[in-house]
Length: 298
Length: 254
Image 1 (cartoon, chains in turn brown, yellow):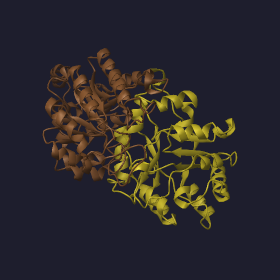
Image 2 (cartoon, helix red, strand yellow; image 1 turned 120 degrees about the horizontal axis):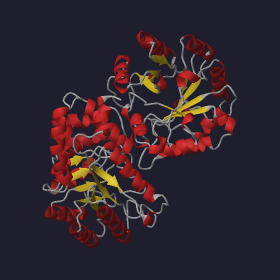
Image 3 (tube, chains in turn orange, cyan; image 1 turned 120 degrees about the vertical axis):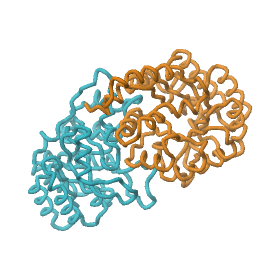
């Protein structure tokens, strides 16, 4: 094994997965608990300090994944709150909302933030630039929360099962809410990421996460060239092996230790409310001591 | 460890950083991969891949100890038998076929004939399900994915056929595998470059149901990050850690 691989599986500093999901009994799949357990198993292997996660309603079982009903949203958020309660040291929560139901969405944000949610999750229930998202943006600004918005990189047409947005759509929303940080979901999650980077470059309050099953060579280089390391968040979404692969790629791409640290966790610590990740503060102290004795491992 | 799914040369639909043999050698060293079977990426899109094969042989020449050529041969091109002979003479362990890009259907007699002939000379047929995610393809990239029916048809062509299917996901692998007899199943290997890991654990499930001996290591460099299949193996559940994949070097030593 190379030192780069040792570093990825023997973490010397914190690692925050800014785009994770958990399942629950009402999600329509018998293996939901196994999938959740697998996320923790792989997370421990990778060295993930915190999973910042959401539950997407019933994941299509009783209402569509990307158009969840208010009832399913509440059930899903309750399930996410339960995971947080069981795993307070390693899980943080996005509260999921459907902006077509403004009153319900605002009530869910208030309810879940009271119980510890640190961000808002928007799916593809309404195009990002739509004014109906403004009350959600206002609530995020008031509570100091980032919004993770599901994105299709370069929307060239309508797609079934989603009212999908791309980087340009999200930029319209972000420009109306300059005090809110928008996490542009999964640059590796489908579509043309090369369209996304110039579409958002002038919106400093949009920070993409690098999750998704896509592992194209050149994708990370282009993201770094156009946006820089201070705007990228590490994450996995549904494929943790691609998250680990991207982490290992970042380690050999020529980044400085500070830039790598920013993508691993420091950008997330900046974007989410203060003190959301207390173990990172502790771990970085330990990492500093460890690094002093492992100089040259990379 | 041998990477059966590496390529050199540019891709027509997007920029790919330095897809060159010298760089591939550096990547293999970094990732501790001993050797690679290397195709010529633009040849998948050439009408006549002959000159692409010639370039492949020439560019891999200085690295013959680690980079094995996998030339592209069209079964609908005149005198493909000569190209197959040249491949064997060049020490190719396999040949690459691209039925979707050539608009060759799953029951084409020519492709079966070529697969049988390659197998009789100890060479595998390497098939590519896809080069890119369906969601990001160029508007002019209309070939579509290789179908499971096409793979099943080739696997049933005869006993000499040996297939290595790259860039397939769990659904396709299961559809093909369980649509073949036990004898036919043994003619097919799959690379792990596109199979999902945790939390869905598709790779682990396939190892448990189909067996790790049906899988080989592949990356699809230079299109995809080389680190992905290794990361997938590293994240297997404890009972599967350290499991051995099939060794293509032992199976195909042409």
